[in-house]
Image: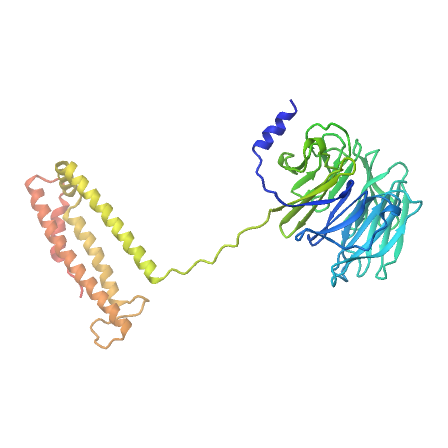
Length: 496
């Protein structure tokens, strides 16, 4: 029943990652993939040495390193840069203990070998790492070898290697090595599952804990304070860098048919965990929940051992490269996916509406309101003519007393009186003065209209009040204040 969770997860996955390109390389297996810091180059290494590809053009670039028969299979590779130059430097290790540096020439787009050395007794170089804050002109490289030795080296501006320190671990065969932000070195043990932190000055152990499993590969995200390991079974496990060895979360894949190490990495600024498998898929997990976000199809199940992956985050784009061991001497396919996870469409600047736009909008709004009012009026008159008129008359008799109408008119007249004295901005306006500017003329015109409107309103209010009082007198009204309202009406005058 283990296939059911995978089936349901796949049925609801959103395919965010798009296949960018497929590269068919030489016969043999690929054990190392590395995407350059600018995202333009891909290095792949294995049984046939090292090859470098331009990702956009899908063309293989020329390299001066052609000694893979004598130096052994490429086991690991990293890209590095220095503050002094923007040129990419490729560093890779081999199964016979060689560490080689190739530097990209910006003039002829080729790679020249600038340094090559065999370390120690020639044991396999199992892992490499570089520090991003190396001093000007120097590269700081951490190297782990099969004979349990960790070395930190610098490659100076003259392309010469110098040793910072070298320590032999007691039980741990290093499988992955990563620089911390303060240049300390994290080491992950292959067989014993040990995680330790070495001081950058002399390599002394300052922290150690056990992950309680074999470590096939490991990746660190310093900003989030976590690391993830391949436990060479059915997935990957997340731990805290300052933890006590207890797992934070597991990321489960399908049950493998064989237990082989698979590379794992962080992507999308640490939001996802990307790992290989033996069923032809590359898994993309949500780091916080452990759920499968997406599965990328690399190969068919029969030849689907995806041991080698690499990721690169650059300007909101996550790039994933994957490769697998080829059966026999067959061709090897490398696939590259991309996802622009942080791309947001810039909001377009709002266009200033034209005068025609606003005038048309206002006209349409007024027509719509008038049409709605007309439809409502026709509907009420057709269906509720008698009851509507009777109710309206009763409400007018009950509420529209002469006193109320006169009070409303009186209040309005007071506002008109104030408006006659002061303009729009609080200035005093003399409406009798004929000497006026263009602004004052419009203000005085509005005031005169208000005065005429107030006078008309008072006239209508007095007439309405009289009509209402007559009708109320015939019906013995219960509103004796109406008579007083008439007296107020007689004494009310409009100040002009």
